[in-house]
Length: 214
Image (tube, rainbow, N blue to C red):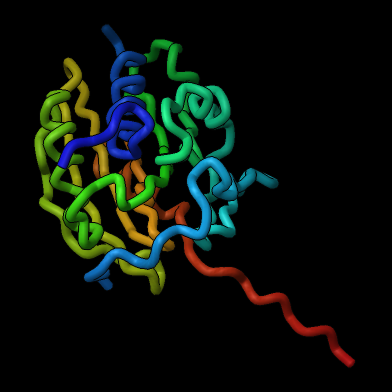
């Protein structure tokens, strides 16, 4: 299986990881869910309100860190085939083009029509093309795909790293399949601990509104 151009989520992940690098000092599902009700061009892109990104289509929220830069719309316009994939969120600790003396941490969320990958049966399979691509960009596998829980939600997670001079960039990608889409959540940071803290901003499910007292 190959990624299908820079609109693919796995390529989104590596593309943004490359942006970060350039800014430095020099329950597992067994089958693909039913066909999507609409293509990615009509997917609800979600919205940021009071520092929290919400996506009702896939039932998750992400709490942004204060001061981070939202570049979702700018980078979304670079998508080559919005009918196959959609960039949902792309936020950075600092602008991707800005240099700095630390890893430019980032969070990237994207969705792709699962049928773009013939033979893809579950979220774990997605790490085949993802790992192939990350290795081609100089990353090494730290942890092979494993089950990972975010609250009651089960996803698959893979961990990668890449040396950048005296620094090490860490990347973790969480993947789920829902409504005929592969949804990837990619977190980039300067340490494993930082990446884990970024992951903590992700949550699933909707909070129930208390019923009014009679």
